[in-house]
Length: 495
Image (cartoon, rainbow, N blue to C red):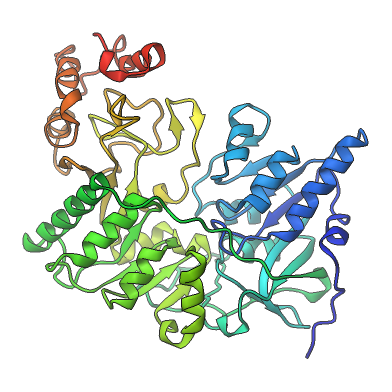
């Protein structure tokens, strides 16, 4: 049965969207993000502004998207507000200039905030699909994100049917939305490979206003290559986990892994795959990167549950050329299921995420450069960290050729407190905070994780205040940051 929905151009679709409306776009990273319609909306905004008329829309997505969505809308000054996460340079600049209202959110909370009405009415859902049936069954592409919730809650729907993604993706998605309280039931996932939902999203076909056809690749960029520093971080994490198996803290059969995004995460996963004492494992995570696909092909990762298939074009084509080899080993879920604290706690996930900044007592800053400028957002790191079997944060010990220490007396912004963070790893070593008080944690961090060029400075700081459970000096807590702002080098800090 062929779809009977009107076929529209992207310009015709954009003309249906009005100033001040709220839109839920598909996408979790650039994978599965709507592309041609948001670009056309951006062009319309430019034309409206040139004609002296206001045109801005509220933009809600699963997580970050690509330049044809976040970038195009930001450059067109077309965003009224943005949530829950972003990584586009143009949007970041607009946010930090105070032009775009951005509120950072835990990704597991976003879909239910939309359902509860906390973010206002949703006028549109604009989603990418591999297929849509006449009776309203939508087959998503390379991500799920919050698209099922947007589709269920929006007044009207526009669909980008992208022929880049085959209809044979049917079976790679597990769509499940929990009911709202007081009717919510336990989420019946007890292992990473459990399936609990449908293969497609079902909507009322009367809400589908039109379909725009496209053939656009996901705008996934290559991550920075592995370096000596990231390799050593990876080796330190892998050896720590192997030690946890040896001492009986982790079962010999291992536990599911959640990994963040980027070159450090790739190095960690690569080191885990190479370590002879770490067994074949499963992943219950968000973003499935190239390195994860390598582990699947090597049979070091037996199953991976994620939210998005965020892989480069050659890797994605390799998957599409061999879909049967990956069928039953890859599964894409909504973000509120992938990141759900109930499931994270139940199945015993080991979380491994990247910090921008850590302090000597174990607090983590994931989002703000020098406490002021938003980088990307908290993403799903908090969903996993607070509820993990073991929560690990990694970071290179320095940045900007050693002018910035990633480990400071006090975080300039805090996203994860010492109560949630159990292990910190840099290229220099590991600090295991479990069972340690603040003074013991500080000694571990300084001795094991801090770059040698900053150890004496941090020891000086630690000795400034002798009293108190957590010995902090109000006068000197941000001395590292002040030194950088004044001289461009934290090594010039004076206490």
